[in-house]
Image (cartoon, rainbow, N blue to C red):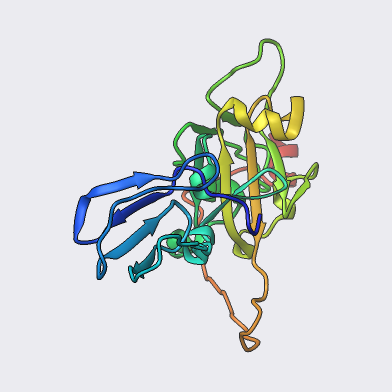
Amino acid sequence: ELGDPLIGATVKVKSDPNNGVMTDINGQFALNVSKGDVLQVSYIGYVTVELPITDQNNIKIEMKEDSQILDEVVVVGYGTMRKKDLTGSVVQINPEKIADTNPGSVQDLLRGTAGLQIGYDASAKGQSASIQLRGQNSLGTNASPMIVLDGMAFYGELSEINPDDIAQIDVLKDASSAAIYGAKAAAGVIIITTKKGKNGQAPSVSYNGSVSFSKTQKRYDVLNGDEYRAY
């Protein structure tokens, strides 16, 4: 909060790094300095302050948050969390890096993710493949990860999500995800974020196209109706 004391901020003389102290519970400090020294104050997540020493004995220093550091966020739960506050095990998948593989489904994007096993479905739809995080972790039940799409729990099929519309996928693998989503997250959470427009940028249109060929390997010579009747 604005005006609150910063506990544990580092205050030192720039020319003599050994001459330094930490702020106490009230945000106060005492340090022997000389006129002309430069006082350097630093704290994680805040912009470092450099202050030349003049004749004054009492100095009040205000620090501002470093927006560049705080902008680094990871999607956890129904929102985002600062990277430095994150303690759980998270794998982040950026579909743009594998767009050249032309994924036909969301499962194709997820294949190869550490700790995530994607089964195989031979049907044309190809969307019934099993998904397991950390293996079979529940006896007698088909425990698959919870899916969250753009901040909302998603209960449909992954075939309803166009892989070309996905901007980012975050896979929460450890038990800390259950603290956010409850029992449904016992088998892990897959968070899917779709592409959106960005403020301050001109509208843009992108096109994705692909062409594929299929060929029958072998045709069986079978009887027609008259031949079968004669047989």
